[in-house]
Length: 462
Ligand SMILES: Cc1ncc(COP(=O)(O)O)c(C=O)c1O
Image (cartoon, rainbow, N blue to C red; front, side, top):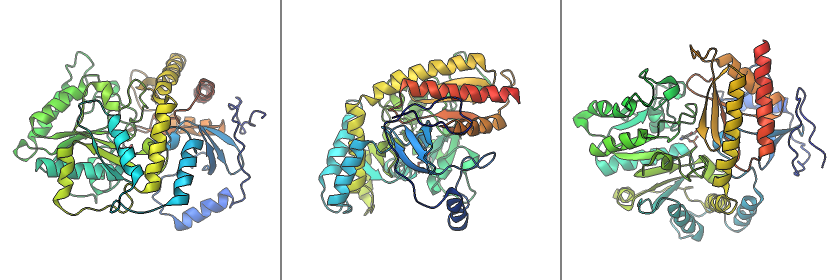
């Protein structure tokens, strides 16, 4: 098959895909846009509407997407870190199709084989001796974090939760409270007591210190935050091992050891939100928390767990899980046969196709190239991340670190023109996040870096 025709404005040929997208015969992009304006909630975030046209994606295969005109894109956003093994991975599709043909819905009121086999497979991916064996399935990351919070409060008998500034845990009532980025927080959220602690964001240290001379003051500060809770008693501490929406913030290696110790000393439980960092994405380890030498009491998962399908999970120790038996509890779609078939197939592919090792190897190659770009372009203030969860933070000056917000917008838009989809994140929206499906190849990375390089060059000429 000949290389795909690059979109207008592209100077680089897109990597060749052997997938032939089907002809699209639905409504035009403009018609979809008009329908969206009329019938969807206007608060839904839309990319590419400032300098350019929104994009309409109608087909996907592995690391590539196609728009309604048949133009191919490399997906380096991964549906916001949700596509782990590749869009419409043929083996996942086959298993889901078979399940849909046989049984779409029962509930956990009846027995079903896939949910238990899958839960056992998840348990086997946690460190031995962690006790993380019992799983509750839901439909979204927010839902998983809601249940984790509920369990933490039931188990400890305490009300207050601790989260981190700059963290993101969802958009529902309680999880919006736990989210530490104000852009995502409406005033009308749920009434649980939440205290915000200091993240390990070394590039912009909230305490103005630098690692390692800082003695991990950010982590030790959790103690002061706990002292603000009634009777110094907390239910739990929730954090992403690497803050994703917050701009791919990797704390110092000892950060979570210090925090987890303090939280445990005060009777709280520690929840790792692995919604973005799980399933091998950080490369060296299967779970994000393993990079920091800690074992959480509870782990929440979503996004990559279902390779893009609505599926989430909370895994914890049996004594914590048991708290849900205090009252009647039922979740209509949690553990649905189709969702768990999807998740189970995804997990098996992660193992069979050495996805974690790919994230480590391709991610290492990618990060080196980003560092080389940093040497070339002053706009890149910081390169960070692990495995295939990487980012560049754009600043107007390396001394001032003033966020280059407009430049980040333009870079994302110019990348799209050249056939590359990337996401923006960070409290200032000046961080470009790369979280492609983990089947990405070195030629894809070369293409990606060339496109970012060209976009940065364009910016330097403005
Ligand atoms: C770390 C983290 N936790 C939770 C969530 C919420 O997941 P969902 O959008 O599926 O509710 C997100 C979503 O971006 C996330 O990044």
